[in-house]
Length: 75
Image (tube, rainbow, N blue to C red; front, side):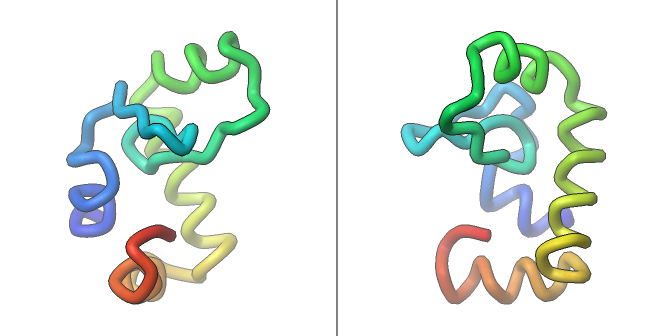
């Protein structure tokens, strides 16, 4: 988790990217309202919980997510 999110946001909970990715886990939020984005950015704990759930659902574990990131420069 640490290596992956160091690469994505450097653990900055207010991080934003030009591709509509936000927070510590760089959640893709294109199409979400500004209110939803602001709510997500207001809570680093909620961001971490969301990110853990996302990684488990999509990759199974953080090692697999990091391997994917190394190959693709995103996860």
